[in-house]
Length: 422
Image (cartoon, rainbow, N blue to C red; front, side, top):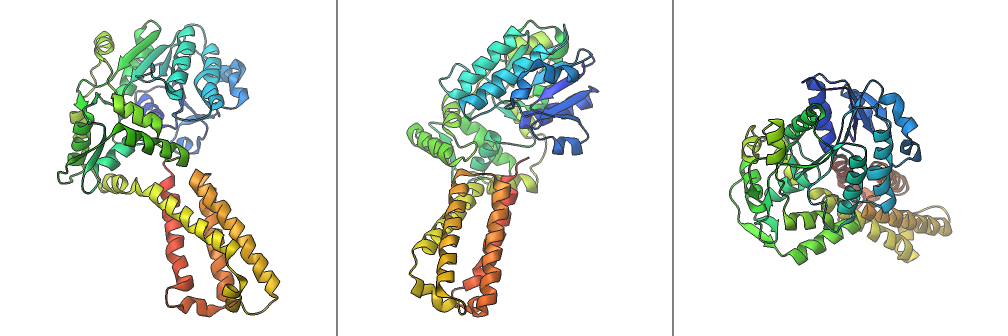
């Protein structure tokens, strides 16, 4: 059947982008809604810029002009971590307003997740989002692990772990069961739900092939063309500690929630829904091996875990630089800064130390990576130009001196590139 016009929430996410492209390829009139729509606009989509955390989006009148003509709502927006206020806005308040603004009889689908019965903020707010969706008559899909030709978040982490050089880490014994579904197949199922007239409520959806966590890791390793490696089983307690550290340092998919999900597995019973719809997703072995891994896939898998390493390395660099700027005795650096009053150089050294410590703290919390990269580059260039003018001999110091600033600038640039995932 022909798809109805669709308002797609969360269109700039990993799942959302696959949905947007699939619905457009199927001939649907798609409005791609996201907090940032620049990339989607460049991809040729009609867009709606909306931050679901903004109170204006919690009013049905905000959405009503974009839902005329029986336009359906597909909600692929969601948070993995965040404050209760952010969870409430994204999972409950803004979606409820959008659902209420639909024309009578317009279809709607919420993309939720399996495991919503877990005791985590993510699961608790997913349950709340499902409650609101059910009240408004939406079909609710609960996928397990969603994979694609591209990757993001947890699937990027899975590729990175599969590409480790000496052993492939898994959480616990690695026997947890998954039945991954390809994002394009999930989009196809979602489109079928929009036209099938299913009753409101939740439906599990996944692929037809079951695979263990260890088996999936080894499958991805074979797909990347890497030689066999032994499985490294990480006890759940140690993995949880890594996850909590990831939460503290904002390391993305390395989180306590992700560790809990891996410890339990992500298996969805897809058979009732696929039988009702007459749609059969591909198995994970089929879609993973349906195309060769490219250079970009191998580079991404090998560099993914270098991203937090680079960030924390830069944080240590700025931390030590800041401490030295604040604590170093003046007699150790004043001979290198001829001209001008001593008090001026001492004040500049202390001010530089404070700036360096602020950058170190921002790196630890991963605060606004783009702006932070620009600030780091500006400071390093400023230091380099200033000291070059004051004392050009610093370029010729035996251990590198100012010459070390060149690879530091390159590292800052590499980190800025790696931090941008969309």
